[in-house]
Length: 303
Image 1 (cartoon, rainbow, N blue to C red):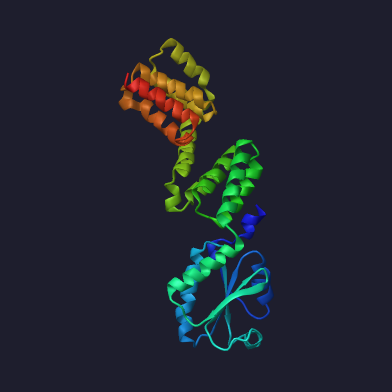
Image 2: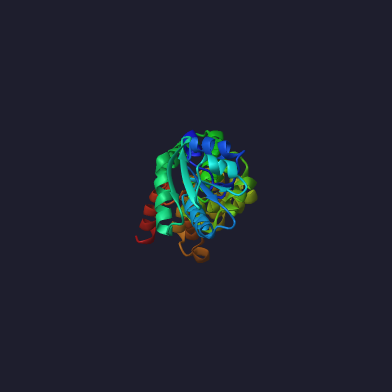
């Protein structure tokens, strides 16, 4: 996980201004793990005004794999002299404490993009580190090590704030820890595109089902009594399924809904089938329970 965090900062923390006093910390030390581009510029420099925004866009697009430090040469003349800056804009690239590339003057956007992408590769493949972290978090969550899973998912979200798998995993971890309000906050603040991802929708549906259960979850005995007296009490069967699902008995909940569909698939505008589809969304399309239940549902509907 250390390699992941070292691989870059969130996109909104990769660009900063510095000066002579901050050069070692912001450039030399920072470049030990993440490549740092240094843009030497001045307010009166026309080409600097063209290059600066293009550099910022390219660095932001690198999503934390490269940092940009901007230095005003008028305010830091001694440092500019030490770095032998004779013309601006001048751009230096540092990695692991030493300069590895440079150019002078404004470049086309395509060349700037290539320059930044080449530097990003110096720190290794951040995507592999990210996937490793997600794999570890998923394993920890499945093993019931919720604190470890939450820590890893939280760190992943520092690097990739809009990553759907991390958002969903973090929310599920919070739910497992009984921190439902925090889980809802994580989901509510997800970026619009991430909120549409299947893994995020799955957790949202699970929360909706938990809310739907309400007091019903605490009264499964009375629901079973109602069904013993009248097996065709479809509302009682659907309420029982809701209670079972909220209590963690997903297989039992699915069985009850399939039984309701078998008895009367059209009851209340196919209420049991619609409820079952919510379960599929909550479980996810690849969950073994979803796959099995879909086969059983097909057999009922097309028999």
